[in-house]
Length: 225
Ligand SMILES: Nc1ncnc2c1ncn2[C@@H]1O[C@H](COP(=O)(O)OP(=O)(O)OP(=O)(O)O)[C@@H](O)[C@H]1O
Ligand SMILES: [Mg+2]
Image 1 (cartoon, protein in one colour):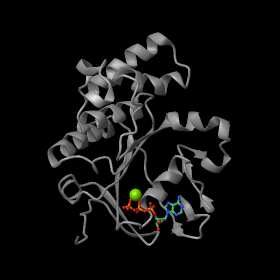
Image 2: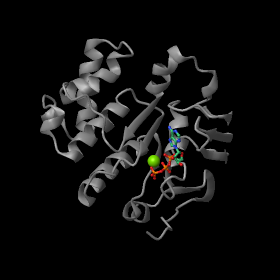
Image 3: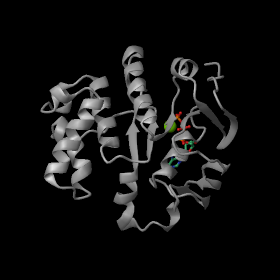
Image 4: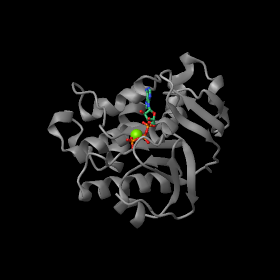
């Protein structure tokens, strides 16, 4: 990101001049108080929001130059995971993950093979035919992670992926995300989880008032709440 700003149509200035370079394969936590601009920062990376000004380049591509119709192809290269899972309730685990490959028109055979492969990574092969409501929160988040990485994206972006989960389940999710990072995927993750940040040390960026206030190689959470 090169001098990126975001003012929402209602006048709220959410991001105020962020410049940052994230290397391929890095793992970066984004922390900061509520309303600091973390989600806005993240949403601009997958073109959910456009910056008011500034430049964002991912994997050599200038995001502002991507046409609306090509956004699905950008999303193939950037997997996203949310706090509230966002699974399709009427599709099985298999179908939820397969869907991400169908939209980019992969062959049926490739889809079947790759979906079972990622369900293995998130340890859910035995629940491929289950519907989301038949799963625990942690299992639903594992499906969401499988869906996010099924197309082998260069970057995995997660906005509070453990926000709705108990501590033990949160650690399970983190170990899966760490494994995905170790296989070469760049990870950017916004979180309020002090326990995870302080015990699984990674590069840490703190955002306050829409600006970067800290950028540490193996940072700690650092806020009192
Ligand atoms: N769609 C929107 N329209 C207008 N203002 C918004 C919008 N989304 C966020 N904001 C505002 O932008 C600021 C930053 O919000 P953002 O969601 O990026 O914060 P955050 O750091 O992710 O907070 P949290 O930790 O609570 O998730 C806030 O003041 C918020 O009210
Ligand atoms: Mg947020």
